[in-house]
Length: 238
Image (tube, rainbow, N blue to C red):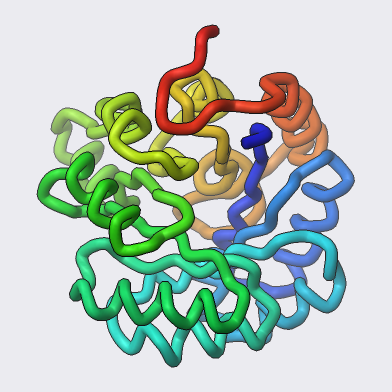
């Protein structure tokens, strides 16, 4: 799979999300993610508006589905999303129904292993249930509170190679990565590079970060796209 840059719009204001999306697309971003904060603040309006403005750009709807899988996937698909996110901690039946709805409505399914007891086994389970992609994810709250308490910080890089080698679908690593770490994830065999909070986005205020965001994103896109095709299911040779 070609190395891909996904811009996560973890914002709460739709107009700001549109401005950030426009900057990202000018910089070379491949996919737009309607982040969970934006979905909570704007509902499907955010998905519909972005799809209407950028119909050729795949949109990820990070609803983090835990129940009501069929209905939520149907709503997201009809709003114009190309991909929907279901949580691996959900009941098996919920994942199955999201996958079924995805097939029926032409939407790809991203399975998120956040908080699964064993992230590697969890990734394998998500693939077996039919997910098209795996998100190897360390959550925002656990990272924030551990940092405040002076505790060790988990990283999605810790077991990323194991996750990549355990599945035959494309993987993305999310949660607390620096810009440099995110850019390097294709070297682990994870071609989907996510840029969002707290990289281009202010994580605590959920607003666009300060500085030349578009310029930073352009450099990120150039470096990520330079990887070209990234084999999935094994670590590529650097």
